[in-house]
Image 1 (cartoon, helix red, strand yellow):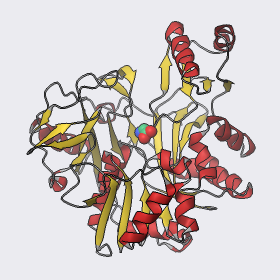
Image 2 (cartoon, protein in one colour; image 1 turned 180 degrees about the vertical axis):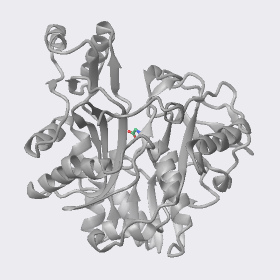
Image 3 (cartoon, protein in one colour; image 1 turned 30 degrees about the vertical axis):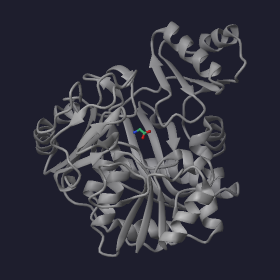
Length: 426
Ligand code: GLY
């Protein structure tokens, strides 16, 4: 099977690595990819992955049997539709179904119709005055959740008790021409549940937890994610089934009923408070960095699973097999991330070909004979252990062998879970 993956982050590197272990896979291509991926995939760096015809041409010229779309932007732009129109199997939803992430207002409407528990929300359209912003903020607090309702790759959210900060973010988003969504704050630990979805068929993967704040102890600004672990030892038996039954299945069925069935990976971002699980947001793609941890534990060969979704046969797939133990992933970020990441710093100890060692590259580029940083989240390291302690020890030992001037990472990924300081009300 020849597979083309679209994207250039650690998530795509993790997908490629898992696909490379599947004996059905004879060739791996990635567009645009990054220079850390060259040991396992052929790069196509000049392709605009948001341009359907360009992607169709590339997939056709490669004889791709399957295209896997990583990020949300090409999905929202309709690249999966262009591939389906050209009869090329694709893992990823249509533009219409990708609105579950692309438009928070659409997502709220689907959730309301499906009777799914989520935050209260009010939206502001570009052109709204600061008085209108203030009037909306008056309905919320003491913790404000202010979201960019355009696409921000999980990065356009400010959660703060500082009203001025909430107001400034709302105004900045409106000035950038995007709508703003102000939401009530959902309490309780966060859970990322990735589900394979093919119309009405829903198959959950292992639950994971992201760490969104840049600083240890969940301090500092929100990021795209600084680390994750899976599964969640504090989540009781039956909790995943409850999330599927109360949230993901009703949403998948509602979308199918509306004539925009979801086909791909539906990512439920949840908070589990006293009232049970509630939706913080849906994404139409695998999450980063949770994917690095979740895929590390998947025993079922990945290409067959993704292909079954792409070809509408998910219901025929036997139950997924998982390795015992836990996986932890930690992100190495560039100096200045998230506000203003510095680029061009030399990276050592994480050359291409270090996948077996847990390295998954993201913001990297080759400069002469060196790998240098070229983005905010530079790479991640994933490790597996019989328990979270062992997985953490492996990851942090590996991370110590990597050098990036000014680089920083959180040393407390999964620590609360190890120390039993996290749990849900039963
Ligand atoms: N883990 C956050 C995201 O992928 O959006």
